[in-house]
Amino acid sequence: MFKGKPIQTMVGFMLVQGIDQLYEFVKKSGWNQIAEVITEPWGGKTCEVITIDGSILRFFEINACIQK
Image (tube, rainbow, N blue to C red):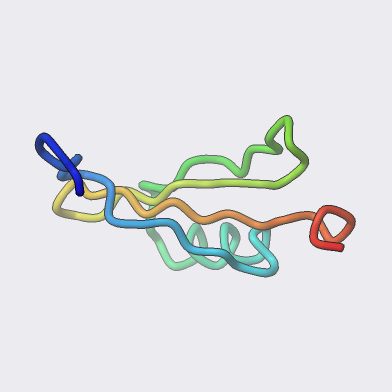
């Protein structure tokens, strides 16, 4: 089904509600390996966290008007 090596650093995508609050919580917890929240051209918001082993967790939030 899949060919080639998987990207070892991408752990997964997670849909969240309240990505700005998630960002603030992570920063206040002392974790500084989080990218700023970006508003994407498709209307959603994303941010990435780099774990201590170098893996990437990408969080995204879909705007309520897009979900309908």
